[in-house]
Image (cartoon, helix red, strand yellow):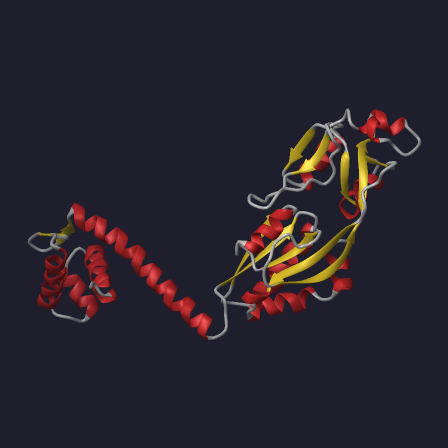
Length: 300
């Protein structure tokens, strides 16, 4: 079998374009390098280098070999480093899924604090919506989820910590015809207007919607920023978390209305895969704190 040293030798010769230059770099005699290359070519059954008077150049087969060999060398190097990290109790990456309901300003603070504490663990942040958060955990795309809502819809070794309830505000634009109705709104009055819904990012677990009446048209958007724009333009109606909607309500850009059948508060939690516990994951769980701190920093 070709060894890592063989792949490195081919790479060095192709880069320097000379057996002599490669020999000088490796502190060998040119004949030893030339002989080693010849042995590799015989083992492969192909010629990798065209020999010239004072230099060598790759054949088409040689160019292909070098391209793939460089990929393999990088993979071998990554494998060594990741194995060393695992042996020392470190995971090479920590993946965090955040539901779109959490405060965006806290994400950058978490990232900055994590990278100040860990110098050899990569942090992967995924923004998910509704059941997409649970799917990220169940498929292994993420190790921990912040802001997961409702009951756990998947099985497995998942632990969770309560983050408190999410209160919802029913919103319309300041110029919407529903603004003039000074009483709790009935379903029949709401049904003619599209419901602004976030797109659940799950692909395997059944999708959820914030709020949707029977036979009501949807307006599906990817995040709350786009939802706010649609609310303000009067393109639809619907619910939004109070902690995200409050600044726009106070500014008069959106109007909160009461419904005859209001949406109940939603439970929210921090969830993680107990089988993927690592020093990095433990640090994140400690950093995020208890229920009161989680609610104050991520949902208030």
